[in-house]
Length: 135
Image 1 (tube, rainbow, N blue to C red):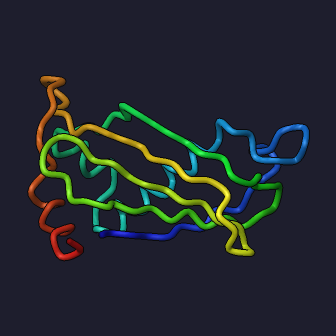
Image 2 (cartoon, one colour):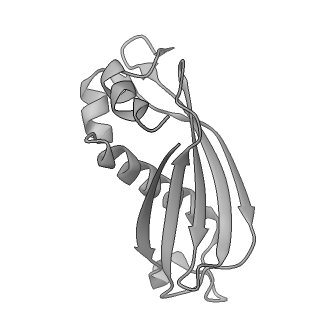
């Protein structure tokens, strides 16, 4: 398993009239955790795109357990539970507050796609090699 943690401070613009994080913003938290998880491997989305690969989101599931609130310091725990064997990669996210209470869980599925042909392709070998030691 490959796991990383990223912290995010909830700023006012992310909250609704009740002072709680608007539900649509959790997808951004997943994305921030995912981007930092990839960066931890030594790559960025920009690097992957330079390889001719894009990674569109094809499925997202979210479960809301407790609200995140204005000025909370959140920890986004991002996990790859299995190494991708083909074109599909699933990032599991858990979001905790400063009291280490689980607030939200989410699963985001992306495909590796050849940008020119817009066809699914396998994960680049260089990234697979970096991940192999965690599985």
